[in-house]
Image (tube, rainbow, N blue to C red; front, side):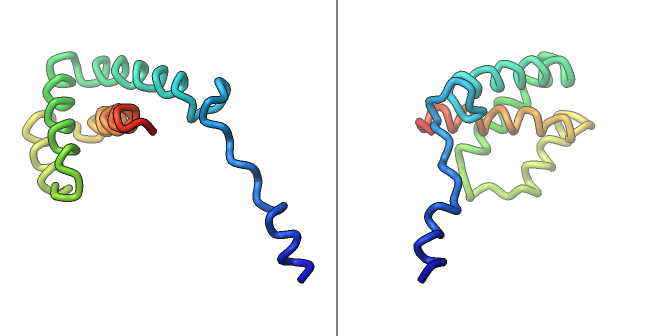
Length: 102
C-alpha cells in the first residue's frame, strides 16, 4: 500500500511546453528549424538542399505508406552523401510537428 501511495510522487512533473526555456517550446523549435535550414544549405549546397527538402517533404506526407529503402534510393539519386540528408529529414519532421500544432 505504501508503494502505491508514493508512486505518483516518484514521477517528475512534465515540463511545460510554453516555458520559454524549455527545449520543446515553440521558440526553441523555431530556432532549431532555422539552424537546420542553414546547416542543410551549407552542407548540401542550396540547390541540392532544395531538391532533398522537396522530396523528403513529399515522402513524409505519405506517412507510413513510404518505404525507407525507396527513400534512401531516391536520395542517392540526388546526392552521394545521404548521411547529410538526415539534417533535412529532421527539418521536415519539426516543420510537420509545428504545422500539426505539437
